[in-house]
Length: 477
Image 1 (cartoon, helix red, strand yellow):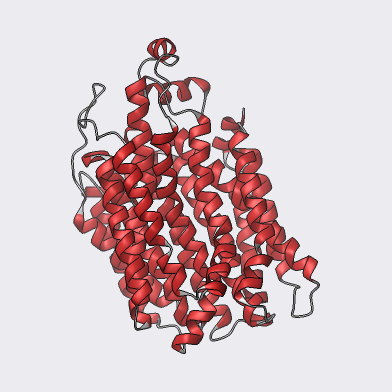
Image 2 (image 1 turned 60 degrees about the vertical axis):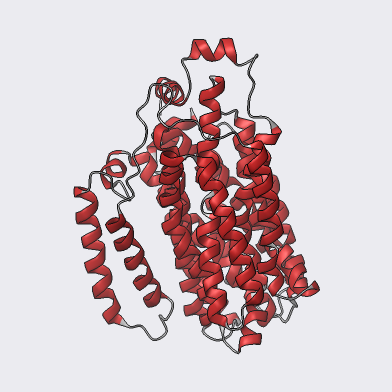
């Protein structure tokens, strides 16, 4: 995108540039009290996506089930999040982000209580679905809160503020395996669910006190967003995705007949989205906005590979290598540290293409390294493999977030941010399916090598998608 186009995008979010120059010093905005609850709320979803990785084996042992069944704890959250993120993003744009943010935290509290008291495995799936819905409100609502604050003070949100929001999400996802291992060791796997309650309560109180009341929608000369959620589109999307997950999670004994309803539902969804005035997924906008569509594709592919390691590698460390949950969490620490450091470096990088290219190459190299590890591989090689995935995790998150800000329509930033997370969750669902196919009932060397080999192929595809994206070349200048 050219410099002129970027200036036009910025102007659509804020007041005219001359006004921003006059008012920014007197009305800095974006104070710590505003951003603190946003950061707390935004860390809950990514934290829970990775924190459970070191609890899956313990949960499976308690309920007498294998890796193919515990994969539903991963897919359940992602199914709910994939649908809820864009829906709650639209609600934030139409009803006000503060209202949506607070309502989401209430659902998070309920999910933590259900998981803490769950008497059977099915209740854990219910808890994860509620958790996916509740935590999905935070990120798109936070982006909308910052947009409203930018309009109030007459300037776009500063890059350091956006970097802190990205760092909260990436940092919490990165430390999730280590924190999860600590909780499982100290209080048991139920602590993975219970820890959400105090965090959500603190975030709720801070948001209630420090986030200003939602301004009337349609300020700054723009029409108020209409509350049009497209329930048919939501239903078709969620049903098609759910049926697809049922197929993917049992690829060892594939139920081929499930593909027929998937195809029918997908065709009906496409037909309806092209005819609906306010579609759940704006197919026409994505078709006409190639850079944004490719950003979603790149984001989904990247996190497919990242989550293969986040869940598959950690399960192998426990069952294939014999480490405890606590030791596995510590072994994932280099990956966590690398992700944290590189998320800060990525936030300071002006370009998009270079960090994404480095990240994609490292993901492919890390997957290649996992194809040769075994139960006798030296510990230092296992630590190196984790770091190879930590560096891309930090760079990809910040770079693709910058790309969404660059290419998405400013008035729809909430729903655009939600669709970015939807792409991420679809990648995670695919990863859980690949893990279930590779491992079956137990994570062993052969399953790890199968998963890693598939990841190498996908990594090469990701490199090609990234280096051939002309929009990234223009954004890098």
